[in-house]
Image (cartoon, rainbow, N blue to C red; front, side, top):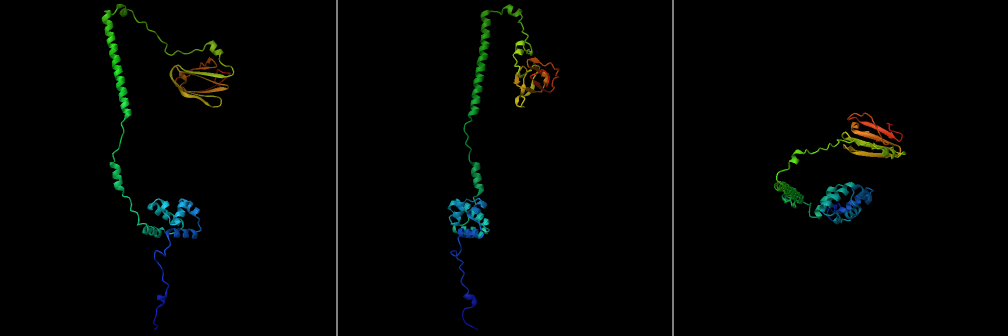
Amino acid sequence: MSIGNSPEDERPFEDVSDEARPSIGRALQQARIDAGLTVDDVSSATRVRIAIVHAIEADDFAPCGGDVYARGHIRTLARAVHVDPAPLLAQYDDSHGGRPAPTPAAPLFEAERIRPERRGPNWTAAMVAAIVAVIGFVGFTAFKGDDGGGKSSVAEGGSTPTADKTTPTPKTDKPKDPKPEPSDSAIAAVPQDKVTVQVTAVDGRSWVGVKDHNGRLLFDDLLKQGDSKTFQDREKINLVLGDAGAIDLYVNGKKIDDDWQPGAVERLTYTKGDPQAG
């Protein structure tokens, strides 16, 4: 039996100290090179800015903006170059004081919840109340003034004259809905080179839609009773009457005497050679 060192004792010593272990940046850089990727490739794949990738590979974590962001960037870059991020994160924690403690959510929530809400004075409500008070005061003053004036006139003039009691007040019968009739001069004034259409709501209200020969919308609204609209075009006018029975229609200065029923919807087209539906 030989005396001396065994073969196991002659194996080279493996340095497993922190000095022999590559830095985080160096490990990520070497893994990127082994994967055949450029810094631009890694930045495009991870959306981590090129400047930050360069800084991390140089073991400069200040541009990350804090430990939480630095750990996130290390994890993202490690996965992009096909390296297990866990050892790199542990190495980062060892050299930067350990893993950052999570921020407790409950105290922040409670502080936010009990924070008093500052509200300014409601000037809108105050202004509305002031306006209502002024209007009420003015109305009350006017009412009292009218009441006092009536009493003084009776006192000064004695009894009300009998003529006022016996003489009936004439009533003026105002026509309900006068229907406009175009005069001869109005008809003569209609341009001969255009089509002119006048729409008047005389027996109620009606929705009216008007388009020119190009299909351009000239009017699309409700005509109330007594309203009148006039439209002109060099070729034709297209009409849609929502309640034709309520409408009086004049084309080129002449009235269209069609017996439209109340509530009937009419679609009409008129040209320079009308009145008659085109």
